[in-house]
Length: 92
Image (cartoon, rainbow, N blue to C red; front, top):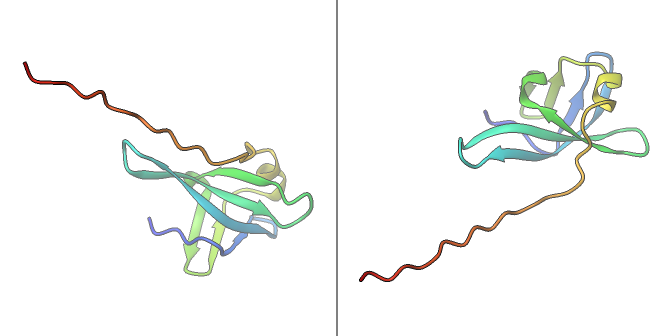
């Protein structure tokens, strides 16, 4: 999926915000969620499952949910990076 960033996002009942981030499963190498910054104050960012996308173009994402349903989705609080250090082993 080539889901666009920084484009308008439309719910079933009206324009609801803008796409801001993609959440990728690093193991499966698949986009699992994307983040929508709501249009109305307090302009919360919501974590939206890819399954909620009804249709998308290069300048619009249309969701198959209402603004009320979007407002109840999990908030996106921040970006986390997990660094894994692999121990170095010496051959004996």
